[in-house]
Image 1 (cartoon, rainbow, N blue to C red):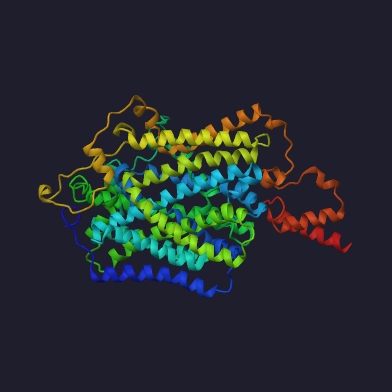
Image 2: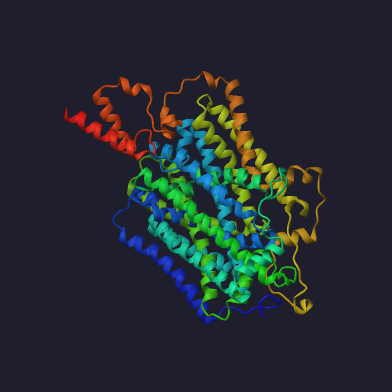
Length: 610
């Protein structure tokens, strides 16, 4: 009986067939794109899809690449353990989309860059570009290792598949279609995998609601279990999730993911026009809303079923990240193929993120390290290097999966990594885009200061996790379990759990204050320290006296609003025609005002005829 505890069924033959079929189909998309585009072997085609992608597939790819296996497995567990405050991220996604589309898209399109970190050399110097690229590579390799490890651990629990066998298979499949198909293969595979992920959530919700007598019962159980207390306006920065930590800290953290992270920027600059790129980000926002909502409802459904018999407390699973896979085998085992669909959903999320990461790592390595140092390389040589680097980074990410076993709660750990590293980087970009007085010295010192502070608090929080009075994990019961003392588990317990239970460490005084800071504030702290330090050092080293002669590197009023600078009225007719032509093609400071552009295009044509 579902929800009563004890061992659950294992994979059937049909589950293996469905799982293998979906994964092979995903890999086949990469092979198809490789065969279809075998004559288009340029580096731009491999890394950016020839800049000919449209908004909808790019939007789905943007959503899928961060809606990874961690999200599929971790977010429902978040709702089960902590309730629905995580749902407030829908506000963060909206704020992030607006900032990315209206500030960063015009800048990157105007500069026509492939690697996000090219901007750092244009604005500051080569050293800062190298440091920024290196930070991104370290962050992405570690995060991708977690993405591979998390679902592999869960699949090991419900299928009995060898853990390291799953890890290696994941990397191999991603390497195949990244190496052969490039960005087009990654994007179109992401579209298919996004559909599979959503289908897995829907299957869990539909079956769970059916067993419980409808979604109304699920909602009622969640309400009485305290899972629907979403809004908390507590200003305490040590509280794990509140309205302020999520809307302020979460918005900046997700902005750092979408605005400057190569994995995401590489997608939307592959669109054929700037309008398509902006549209992709806004459609992606809706995709994020739908995905997080389905994940939260899946978690509430899981709570409704296990409210009287928590599998984790009852030792039916060895980690909270195994809760949803356990539920799947508990309630879907009677429907051959559906557990395979869910496992394929979690695995698809992993494939999507890993392939995105590999492709982005190849892009920044080639653009930021190889091309500047070896300018004589031909397009054909670069294509072979791209493929070789895909294999190399696939192997690196598989190796990094071993470190992920030390990270504990995978969802929080993944977001913490982005906050610690992307926060200072975002601060550096904001300084460069909005403050003309900031010089290279200020930018470098600010970046190092911000990174030092975020690594300090982030590593401290990992070694000395906040106590329960700040995390607010909600109560669970085992009163309804059948003979819990008889249950035995063969699941694999994460090494971090072993460390915490066998070698408790004395807590320093900072553990109750600084190290207990909400992980969502790591990013804002990094941004503020970087900006304040950068401005002060620039002022001391004479940055404000320097004349900046490249206005295209800064955000101007024309990037944000529909009017032109006054000097336009003093330009000659020929200059006006040329300027408007560049503007229409997206080469000048772009604005998102199609009506005005159309009118000025007609005026330019009249002037040309005259």
